[in-house]
Amino acid sequence: MATYDGTEKRFCRSIHSLESTYFRTKFENELYKFKGNLGIGIISDTDPQPIIINSHLGKYAIVTVAKI
Image (cartoon, rainbow, N blue to C red):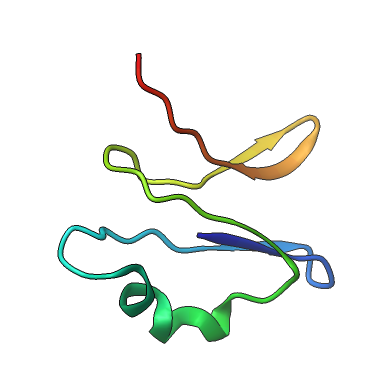
């Protein structure tokens, strides 16, 4: 899960394995760190996500799910 705080202009990101417990119990102790009104999250079996990208377009977070 990642959120963007526009006032501080920073991302807050946290990645956890959800193999043995529920989503809420993994992130509940960290919710105070997530500030801002923009966020993205994903439950992925294979990859640690979201990914934070720095590019000439700026800094952003992306997630992806695909099966090839």
